Length: 138
Image 1 (cartoon, rainbow, N blue to C red):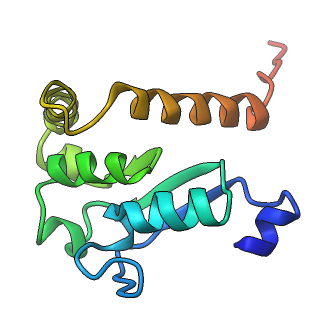
Image 2: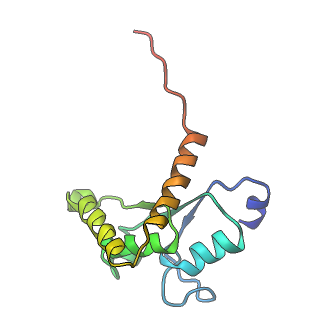
């Protein structure tokens, strides 16, 4: 990653739900501030999008609620969270996650500026990589 970052070829990184004990023995990489913010953002200097792997995988859903995992990954520094299949199992999951994030901000566990930083990175990526609208003649 360091080499790609130095060459300007690193736009997004997907974190895995693996344990890298040399950085964080208690949390998987996708929930670890030491890895997401410490290693990627601070040590490597990465400013692109950090995307989680699917939070509906056993490594996450067997140990955390989806809501708590989302809060922890945002605190850690992730920008985009992948949750596959969950809306089918729980059609209200998005509302529950939003509510949990709002509560975490009210309780001081998560800062609004952390959300704003992700928003800025997402908007930058959209502006950089968005395809122009297709023009069709009927």
